[in-house]
Length: 167
Image 1 (cartoon, rainbow, N blue to C red):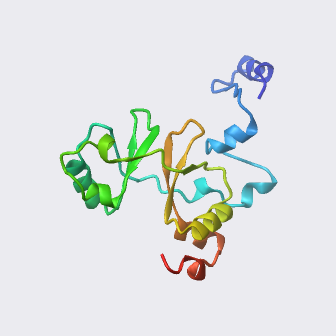
Image 2: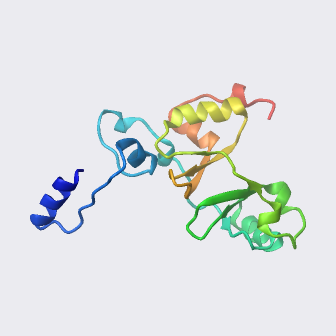
Image 3: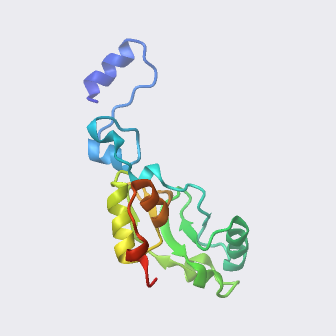
């Protein structure tokens, strides 16, 4: 809303009024609430798993690997203090030198998507690229969670069996 509208609402006694300076696309890309005609179409943010393991740059691979395995995951997202995605530790790295730092073992700059992207489009992309999971982040690069290809396909009704063969 405009600054004028925000000030007017505050003058009427509303205490939680925000002047959002960025545009609608940025709002949606941040995974914030949406309304309108396209609300019924599932977006990446609707199917994201937020319980993905994370670690810091200085953590040791051995400690991270134990925590990831205990949680039933195969990878760990390396994040800064504000949850900005810095890299990812995949299964191979987690089986590596247990004394190595996450920073030394991680793959830097993993591919990310925004929570506002249509779920069907991402499901199709992941299927065609033979990618099982993708990170979902805010426009600033902060981790929201992980989107699983099969879950995205299930929620959108996309049949991926033939496309995913040969993985």
